[in-house]
Length: 94
Length: 489
Image (cartoon, rainbow over the protein chains, first blue to last red):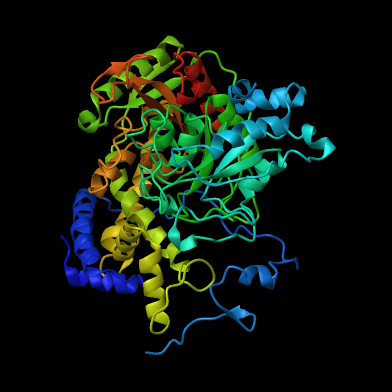
């Protein structure tokens, strides 16, 4: 089990509304999964370098030239709300 | 005639198309008719026209000359509904096509439709689709595996000659194993990720799900390649060759002595042991190796993949595409959209990933998982000093019953036990049908036995060893008794 207040806090960070029932379930299920995962605490990992990526690539660059990009209409075509050729969102206040 | 067309593998169909023995439009229709009537939930969208009726005259000179293909719904295709089986992307029509799919199309492949999957590729049973569950054609009360479950079910049911899949921790290999098919996860970076809806970017890799090893090589040949739109793509250093090996003389296969067999069904173990004997009979030397950190692979994976997913899925916010649920102000709109649009497993992974990355837990979870990842890659490097390939079962169990693991996420995650270490190390691995087990997984079974279910052998090799890996898998396939697929019966 992890605590309900932790579930609420993490859900807020993730911008995810969870119902009461979902919060309860999440506390139980995340607790079980974390309980399993915690076994990696037993490993001696001193002096080990982290792997964030498996391919040794440094600065994969392409030539800096002007080329066609996605037309504005195509980029906006899937938007739930468009105003003045831009993505429209509710006011950020409150 | 239609049945004869379905009987052709993709490679056989390409040969027949080039020779003018069969017609591309008829071949497409033969599959499209079957797809239109399918009852196993394999497809989310199907092509209703026949794109091959009015094809250019030089079409036959393309390498695949019109061979139909099914595409996992994770791949964007311009103007074609592409949802990753999520309600949050219902109705989304991408303005571009994934590079890997565009390459297959340029090589002459014709898309039959988009296949069902676990939402955002998160799952091992296809029960997490936002739309419908996929049934395993071997036994419709069972799951086809996941996340590429629709692709595997489609190929096993003769609803496509072959299909694309994607694999983050086993999502090509495990459904291939559970549906009696070949599934190849290539070396990380071989195939462009451009236009694939992202799950865990340091792990995601596209690859083939096919009836046989030759088809897997053929699809990889036309999928792979460096792409300037994916800066992590490298392509494969050598041209992909169609496999031809008939023996395994001089090849060394490593069997990890560190496998904990307690969680593996006895029938799966028996099929694996018999498979290792066949490798020896083909001339291979079987050696004992150790992968001491592989048992921690699952823990590392279930921190790294959700952490990356929690970042990747931040883009689903009701602003630029997909669902929007209104709320009082911007934050409430975000929160409501994500509440309504994501399914339970996706929410679980976003929560797990956000937790693992949050202040105070980062070092203990995500940071530590990255260290374990290094150890796992080191284990494989050491193993490949002693052997050419590593072999394990692909899945610890045969296909399980629909609903059996839905209430227990951890039990579901254990399905990926044998496949995640290769994903973390970025190395290629293929699942090849190895035999059959009884439906309860208790013992080995023979073709024709009532309810027998397929078991796959996983063969992994060092980075960029695809040609050698495909050759080894091909020799093994030739030495393995053919198990008639559901579409053949």
